[in-house]
Length: 213
Image (cartoon, rainbow, N blue to C red):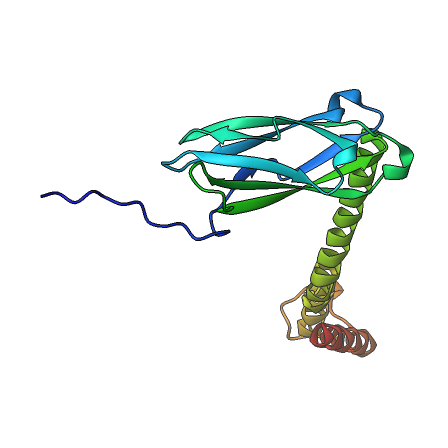
């Protein structure tokens, strides 16, 4: 004898509720935004009842505030803002969607959706653009400060001119001195003692400069 499969008992308030979007933004200067649509999804194997509650019901009109959703289906809930005034700018209202099984009255799950009225979509876009620019400048400054110490610690080698002068001074010191008659080097390449002292002095300065880099 086969036993009938029983559905596990659901705990009150623990059932996840899937609704999109989770935030409603109305713009006073754009009448097309005065009407918003919430979509309630039912991914479960059983039908759900739903009910929409609001903290300020006098400001909104909810079309089909209560109803049912078939298993693995969805339903659209239309919400209209009917009190568009400047005194409501920036005020955060809340909608609560409660769901339950059709055969029961207790709420199995709930989801809150916030709603805000703003004066202008252009001002909102301007504020977001200014925020992005500030974040970009902050990131640029951060990376510049992060990489700046590394650039200072990179050692710089001697320049080509310094190396060339050093080679010239070494070659000058290797040339014969005036009065050395046994050298095979032409006479015009013979240097005086004073010239060799100058070359040695310059070579010493170049050596110190290279050691400091």
